[in-house]
Every structure is written in structure tokens, then in C-alpha cells.
Length: 328
Image 1 (cartoon, rainbow, N blue to C red):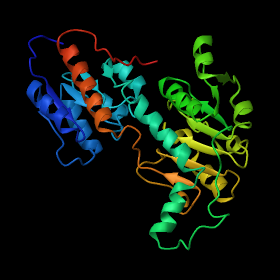
Image 2: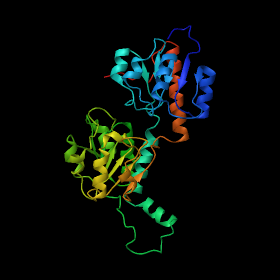
Image 3: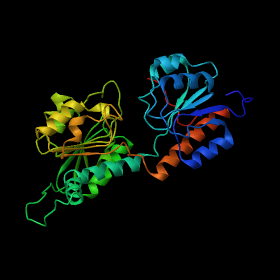
């Protein structure tokens, strides 16, 4: 970036942790969103026409129309979050606007939540909590709320990147056998450490698993990766966990399968039409629904903010931002 631009105009689209916003105010000419109201399309277009640096989040749809409206002063999009599927990266490449993200700092938080769902769904924890709160519990009985034991089961992980491997380590501690499908096979030493079995064919794997954890990114290839046909390949006692992106699952098909008990249960932290939830899912007892809180720890969100600050400052200083995302 031009060294004469000492305090670039930075527009932040959502409320960030106080410590992050305070540091931004010290370093940049920053516009904060103190009401935390999501930006409209018109506000996004105005932002890219006035900001030197835009700091969006997953709730902002930075599509071709927004990108093409960007003024020449927009030098960087520093995304607050690891995923960039809400940004049209093809249009970004054509416009030659650098984009950064915040990878790595959310791995353990997201993996922890995936394991929380993997515990909550088969053990029917939320069902029991609901019965208790509603005053419907009449006392212990031998057959009340029987769920599934985790030990000795098989977990199929779809997407064995940082988060997938972190999920595998946690599953291993519960004596769950780890299987995985990935675009490329892991090195032998990592497979050995995780005691993980590789499947090149996703369909062959999922039909043999007791639990499935989705941890792959959302791309054109993974959109509706779990469509109705593929969901039918799951065993009737199988449980599906998704902490990646909602669009990877055909949500309508999943709701139908859960309603018919063709699948035993699901744990979802992400949804296809966020923040809208399929009404069918809201009526089902065999699904645990969480409001996209996989990275919602104090430490994780502050670490995300630190990465945004470093990416912006590095770019200002004329260096390559450490978390530059290269369009395919």
C-alpha cells in the first residue's frame, strides 16, 4: 500500500470484540457498526466505494455486483473469519482486490463444538433437558431416553484439514474408530497418529459409519454434497454432525430423512438459509440445533481480530499479508 496512506479508512460491517475495535480505532480511521445490524446491499456498495479496507464477516454477501461497484480506493478486503464462500472470489480475481482471512485460530473451538454435538445427539441430552424443564419427568425408569454409546463406534470425517484432524484427535480419546474422506490422502505418519482409515470413495465410507462429521469447506463441488440420494446411503442408526457450512447438506432432504427416522439424528451448527431455519427441523426431537457458534469463544474471536489487524497492518507496510487468499 502507498506509504503516504498512514491511517486508511477501514469499515467494519459487524460488531467485533471491544479489545479488537479499540485497537482498530488506535491504528486506523475506522467506522464501526455499534448496533451490530447486518449491512444491506446498498450499505455494502457504499462501503466498497468509500473504504480503503473493508472488514466483512460471513453475514455479508460480497457478490459480483458489490465487487464491481468498488471504487479504486478499495485496496483490501480483510475478512473476519476463515471461510470466504460469501465472497465471489472469481470476481475478486478479475478486479484484483486482495482478500485475507483468519485461518487456524478457530480449529480447536470448532472441533470442541463438533464433539459436543457428537455427545449431545446420541445421548439425547437436549431431549432430557427439555423434559426436565417442562416438568414432564416422573422419575427414573430402565428404558427412559436410551441413546447410543460412543465407544466402539465408527466416525467418518468428511474433510480432513485442520479442523477435521482436531475432531479425529478428540474422537480417538473416546475410543471411536476414525475414518475419513478427503481430496487427498494424509501422510502416513498423520494417519498412524490418528489411527485413521482413508476412503477415496465417499459413498463407500458413509454407508459403513455410525457417525458422520462434516468438516470440509463450501465450494461448487461440495454444495449439496449430502443430497437426498447420498443421505439415503447412511445407516438408519447414523448421526450426522455439521459444523462447516449449511449449504453442504440439502436441508429439506435431511429434514425429511430425520422425520421418517431414516437417519437417527443430526447435530447442526450451520444452516442452508441462515439465519432462517427449516421449520421441519424445529419440530424434530432427534436434531440438536445451534446458532452458528462454532467459533464463539472469547479467545477465538479475539484471535480472529488479531489476525485481521495483522493482515491490514502488513498490507499498509507494503508487505504481503500473511493470510492472503488466492482465487482459484
